[in-house]
Image 1 (cartoon, one colour):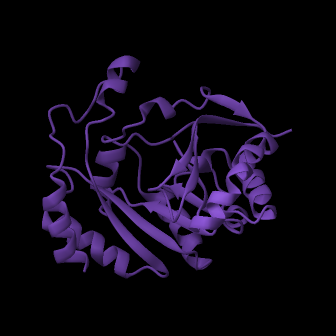
Image 2 (tube, rainbow, N blue to C red):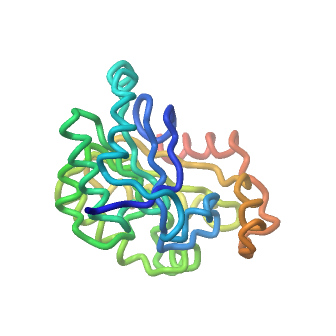
Image 3 (spheres, rainbow, N blue to C red):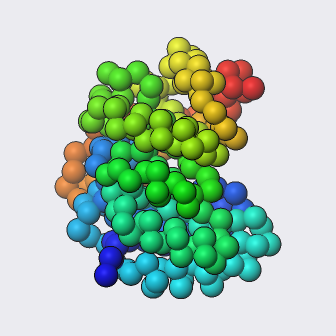
Length: 235
């Protein structure tokens, strides 16, 4: 029987897709974003073990809220695509229950994307960077795998929201964001673009895990400034 490892569950999420969401933060991640605020999700062997049935039994208790708000379940992480068999079985069970499914991903997984995406209604796609050199500097892996996933999602014409974290001194100049805009303009079925301001809420986790924090001293991004820049470039 396939089992998965879950870092944590959020039962009334409001920012990870439309409506009220049951957010499943899956354990394990193969990239190392400099700005990651959940380094405790990196290790694939930690977290709590579930069967797909156990997890979906928890999720479906909230169907009343999903139906009233246009919500559903969001599989996030970590990187959910690193547990493809478990993810697929959970998605299938959710669709049998008529639950809207969202996948929050950077696209760096283990394949089988076509079958998985058959059961996904919406993708929240993390665009870390579009320049290959800057991408690798920021997340410590090449951009190729992310683009491979994106190619499959585009070929299936999946609805997508684009998310991009804006980091002072790294991805916050106009040239960077104009390049992101051009990249997004070349994609199909993009419903929304969200620029997310860098914050330091996860820094203490690095200390607890004895992991060096690469953005030590970088201040949180000014939200008002980002909103103005987003309006100028993306609207």
